[in-house]
Image (cartoon, rainbow, N blue to C red; front, side):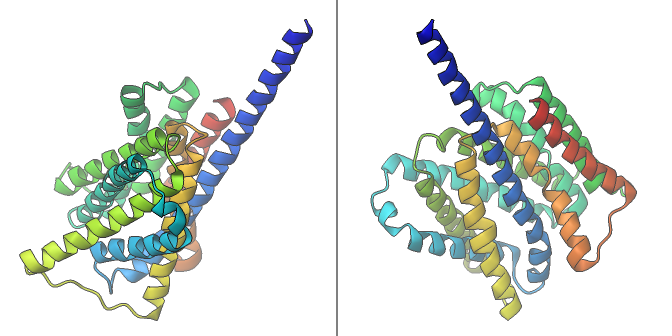
Length: 307
């Protein structure tokens, strides 16, 4: 009886520790989503003077250099399998950024934002097929609330909603971001997170500048790049805090929570973007958008508290 009681106590302790790690992980993911919410204001101020693809390259180059300086010793001892996994995840992340950026040339920001946010729906579906992890009922309810909230928050119901080329590109971006969440969930528990992050950062930076080189030397395009001090400071913030730091936190936190929870938490990004837009740029939210924000938060609470 004493042995059974001891085993029961150990199981309870393990369960409590796992629950605590889960809550901490989700809290950290919410924190980085708040940071990402600030980037809409920053990027909006940079784009008039810097080409979007160049901005992606600069952002990830700054992040790559910062992380490489800190982790030089670990990088020299990197496991080859971790390096390959990081490159694969980085290419998926780069694909998402490119589709999202190019889509904005063909569709409105509101439609692109909503369709990209559909990764909230795609992640549990992809997770069930690829990782054999079926989401629970509370998570599915949370996904439903978050999806409806994204629609109300992001869509302009006064405009035509025909599915056009920009919408297709946005959907492909959403698929890529969904795959990125799943790829991190798959590889983060297996390899050194530090190496995974470094390789992701360098992969996106190199791929972005390779695309810029293709546009300049093969297509003969002129690339906009005339940043001032304010824009350079913004790029530094995007690289160090909104990219390197947040990617580290995401890769670590996903060891202790599910891909579906990650997707639901990331659905709050437009909410925080709207808050910072109101605070810094004086933008306002309509009543419909406010309802959408509330639904997204409700979706998180359902998934977290009940799930």
